Image 1 (cartoon, one colour):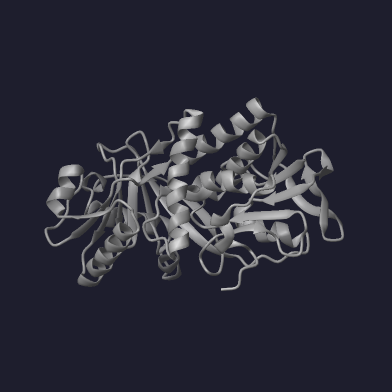
Image 2: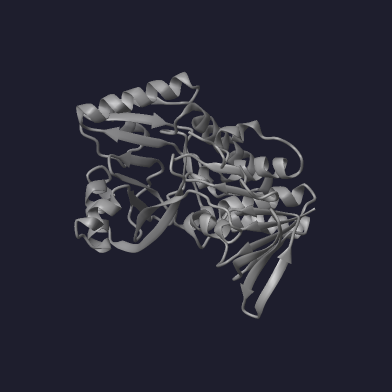
Length: 363
């Protein structure tokens, strides 16, 4: 069997690896370079913290475990399991945080409420007010996404014979009825057709556009993402930290990666990206003093794919007999798991964990 995988972000790379390991003839097509899309512009928090409903929580929790297994298999050093702090200040925020911790504990997830003093004893870099509430989730972490993607593709190509073609864009499909026969691609040398028995779309925010070329519609919205990276600062920060509206984590070499969920609101109010980055830095510096004099070194802009109901779409594409799609928010947390489950289904098995997330669901 020959399979074409479209997209070499974290999902496409993991699917490529697992299919190749299963003995499938895999050709992966990437319009840019591996990790050059949304995957490379992700905060990359590995977690199931606010993931609901229960089946989505379970999927993300399994995704975290799958990452650990993948890193052990490939000898990867891209994972950092140093834990996360979520800080709440107002009464409403604290009530929501307590409810979240109660839910997580009841679902078998390691979570605890700490006093500010206890939190600072674990992460001395932080400065917390006495009236703050802090949730600690020690099993969470973050991933260096580019090394993860390249490790998967390297193993798939070198050890299992997969083919990865970069700088090629899918511009159409050759079809026989409801079956795809070949992907038509634009390359530097002209147009080509890549034939396959099965096609897997892992193209992130372009997944709906790719499937539209085959006459299929995929409901998909887009959510802007914004990250700022500081120049190196004197800090030994290990944990991720989430405040209402602002989050940060170490990014290697003394740099701190800053993010915000309200970028679009601030932009709509007239703030420039540089102004938003400075505002985020100031807010984060209230908790991490090392940021008080930090200089913003770079900005990253990404667009995250979001199905309308907020949970993944993974499975056969309605109306096409040999097309499969894997697209979601939380792709970094879920990518390693998708690799194994998608490969299972494409080689004749069934992954019941994916049943609530089929593209043809009606919610």
